[in-house]
Length: 65
Image 1 (cartoon, rainbow, N blue to C red):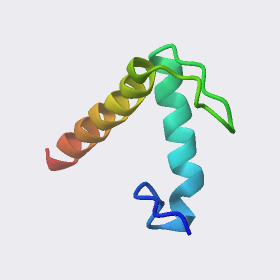
Image 2 (image 1 turned 30 degrees about the horizontal axis):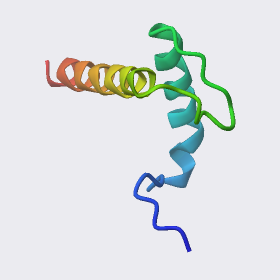
Image 3 (image 1 turned 135 degrees about the vertical axis):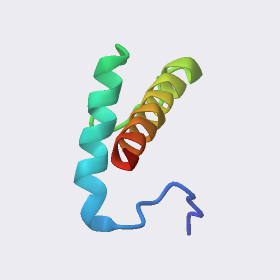
């Protein structure tokens, strides 16, 4: 059994998270595929994740105002 730490805690949110990830990847110029993305460099993968976090923080800050 796999011990994955990046599982989706709310299964209903998976489609939205996948769409958010694809949008973030397009914004930073990374070509993500719907399946295997093991050929991405660490820099590419990090830029996608970093962009997602940046957008989430911005959305949270807007919600506080």
